[in-house]
Image (cartoon, rainbow, N blue to C red; front, side):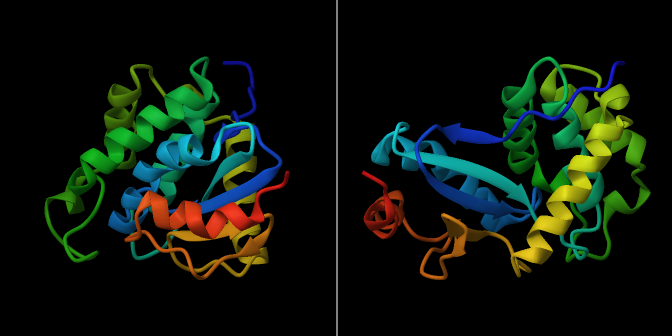
Length: 187
């Protein structure tokens, strides 16, 4: 497979940047991810750009593999949409990609190859070749470096135009998010 860069994981195309730092097996990240399209709709896709960033957390023991598989999906012909399908499927079947209490359970016997195969099935294309791409490795490292540089340690974390916004939380409604973000929108 020729080396392809992973597609940006973005929704909208406005001047205001709304970054959301997600861990792909975190239940709180799942809540936040599900609200992103509605937030863009509420504020206008021409006014806001939602950018997904990954914060891989070591207590989610398959986090690195799952994150890399999502980035691999974004490097396939399906691009962003393939990565979003992967995320939707992983969040829907979280128990297949996480340990019980982060330490035990049936996933103790799973291999990285099995996890990649499961995510490939969700996406509808074999992710193994893309998983090996140098550009995917570089993207994974970029996300890790970017979250550290921005002081992000937990998921989800939110930023507006590069500034962490602690008033936002996954348990809030889309309307509450919109009320917090709206004053930051560029005219």
